Image (cartoon, rainbow, N blue to C red; front, side, top):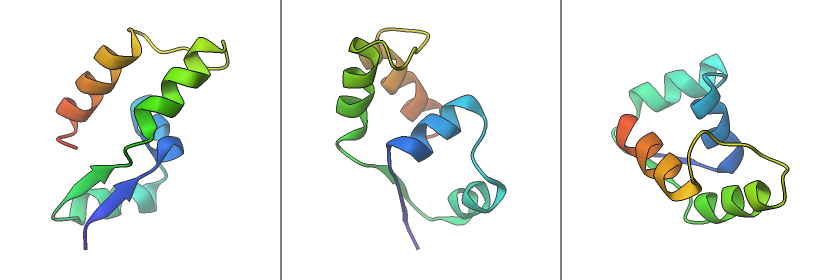
Length: 70
């Protein structure tokens, strides 16, 4: 079964804090996808000062999705 990560799951993955069962499901999945609203939500939270990411959001998002092949 494929998996779809929402913003909370994507942020947890980025921090290395994805719960064990979710990480196991991600490893077993033939396909993993990210909700289309994730980069938008991260950008909104970042612009509001509620979330800090290491790079500008587009670069952060692309680096993360490339790293995990999402």
